[in-house]
Image (cartoon, rainbow, N blue to C red; front, side, top):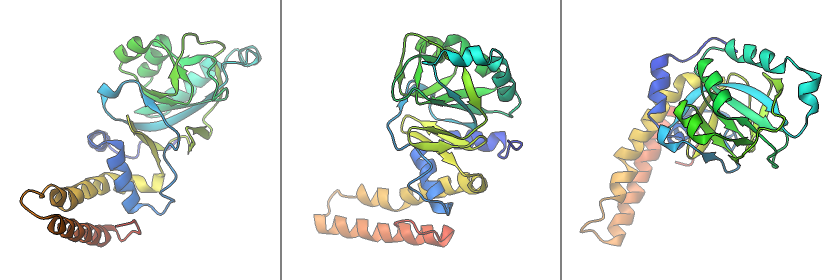
Length: 250
C-alpha cells in the first residue's frame, strides 16, 4: 500500500461525519458507479457508541470451518501479522469469511483485537463473527460483523493482502474505508483527496436549502410548502452542479 495519503487531521475530520454523509460527498465527485463501493447486504455495528471509524484497508480471508489451513501453514499467523504491521495506520481489517453465510467460528475476540489495536488497527469489518464483545469494546476495537459467536473453531489467516468481498462489496488493500452503524464505503484512491471538502459542501448544501424548506411548514399551506421544497431542491441542484458538475439526481 502507498504511504498514508490523507493527513491525521483530515482523517479526524472525516470521522465527524456519518457514513451516509461521506457517501453524499463521494457521489458528487466520483466518476465511478454510485451503486457500488458500499455494502449491499445488511451489516451490524456492535459498537455504535464509538461513532464512525476511518482507516485504510488491510485484508484477509479466513475459513474457520477448515482445519487444514493451520496444518498446511503453521506460520500463517506470524506472516499475516508482519503484513499488518508493515502497513501505515490507521487501519481497518476487512475479513472475508469463506464459510459465509454459515458461521463456524470467530476470527475476532479479546486477544486478537488487542493485538491488532497494538498494530495500529482501529477496527474490523467482517462478514463472519466476533466474540468477547465487551472485551473488544474495552480494547477500543470497533467491529461491523454478521453476528456473534461462541467459539473460534479453526480460525487462521488463509490469504492476506488480496481483494476481498464482504457484504456484497469488493474491497482492495489500501482503500480508504469509512464505516458506522449504517454500513461502510470503500473509497477509490483517486477520490480521496476531494472527499472531505465534498462531504462538508454537500452537508452544508442540504442544511442551506432542502432541510430548512421542509421545516418551514408552520403557518403555510400545503401548496406553499411544496413550492418551497421544489424551489429549495432546485437551489440544491444548482449549487451542487456549480461546485462539482457531476450527474447526480439533483
